[in-house]
Image (cartoon, rainbow, N blue to C red; front, top):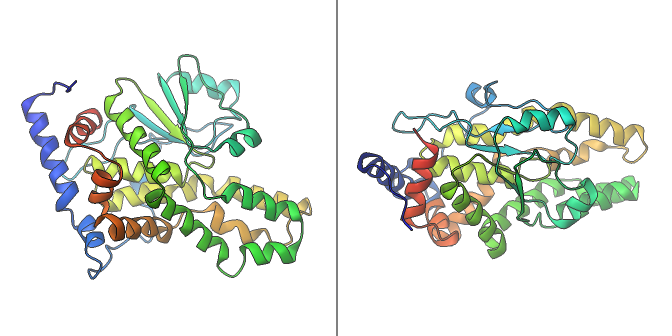
Length: 312
């Protein structure tokens, strides 16, 4: 059934969708391999650190409202509708009280079964329905546990050193485009956002890669400029930095890793990871617009509903 929206809103949505799918300079650059890559922010914009967007919790560090960003036509992404997060398995009772105030009705979990078994299932506030929607990490979680569990500095260097950890992350991002099951999960999530009438949250383990890619897609789809969408993506490094540094120190103090800095490329998000997925989308689908319409199968109705749902 088609959603009924005001004529002016529908027209605005179609206009933004046509821009997104065919005329935005950042996307056009990826559709044409010979064109220069759009400039990336050297640092995250202040908008990505909006205190009203970040939700401080004790058991999770990267929980954020996706709203608040300005679109190309001067409107804003609505706050309080869609949230992104890292794993919710370690939430405290106080955290649950905080999340209960968001009115969440659906929580989508991108973690694969091995991650859920290791970290535990989500702790959710009342009224929030869990939706398992695993997106493969291309073996990242298992690889990390294997390297750390070996306690062998030589093996760890062989697995993660000399650029291998960063190369592995780029391979993970390629699967966001090449793997049909992954594409289906991202598409289902964007359709859920378009169709939902209540606040929704999605997350993975660190809330930075699978969650970061989903958020980048969503923001670009509703008309947020590339620079702001990339800034939101990179903000994970700020929100996770203190926690990740403690993890590295614990690994060193516990005798598990002589050089825990080997895992930094696995802990961080980097623009070249994001660009790897975008380049793959250009190679296979002619650009991000083609990835969204052909790879994810999003139709015009879904694009209009996303705009109507998220922007105002």
